[in-house]
Image 1 (cartoon, helix red, strand yellow):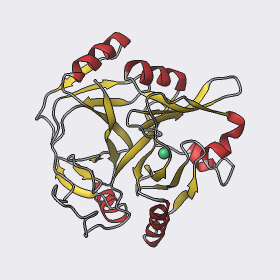
Image 2 (spheres, rainbow, N blue to C red; image 1 turned 90 degrees about the horizontal axis):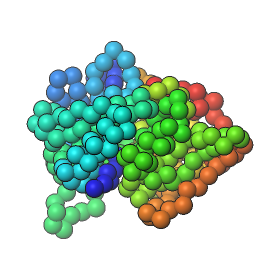
Image 3 (cartoon, rainbow, N blue to C red; image 1 turned 90 degrees about the vertical axis):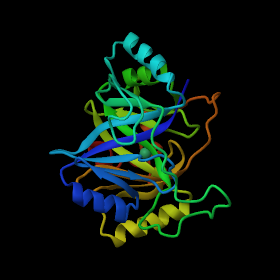
Length: 302
Ligand code: FE
């Protein structure tokens, strides 16, 4: 049994139309469906129905984060382990939500609603399975091929770390520890990347950002051009993280949810040994070239 990637994030927005326009025309996700106050989006190279859901709401922030596991039978195992840990688990039958198979839904100790599912309708990436070209010809905006990871906030990072590793089976790739030895930021993977999900200190249930993969550092540079051509303010970047080694840009959607484009980093195997950063190196750990803490980055989240 195993979770093997971040499946989707559902994000709230007080302005669904404006966000739908931004996420499709500037970020360049594909709009797959609209239904009941929700817009379903995917990166062009994703095969599954959606990886981002925009949900009309009177506030912003994250509604839930969902992980994809290999087998439907895994749900029973996760359900048992979650209940043993003290979580209340709800079963959501297949067919009750657009394109979704059966899922389990639970409130994690970090204050986030999380889901695990094994099946989501496959819609393909628009390319043939026989002799395909490398990319479609109708991409617009930044056009990331897929979602990559998210960074969530929680009051108790060590508790989050214990939960993610002991209950959900994530591997701790990197961590930042305080001078007293407490975990301040933790990075977890199941997909052999530097991270699928990470946690930093902040209010329970908060969203710091969710990120999309780009294929190269050159693509990150082109993304910066696309953002500025569309009048989108850049929070920081293009630059490089010390943690994960990835190249990055941070920016905000029209209602204030932080987005990132990300590339690079390393491949993690199951025998990966956790990298530790010390608090006095926070500037370099976050932004390797600048080597300083960026105030907005450590203070603003939704
Ligand atoms: Fe990130």
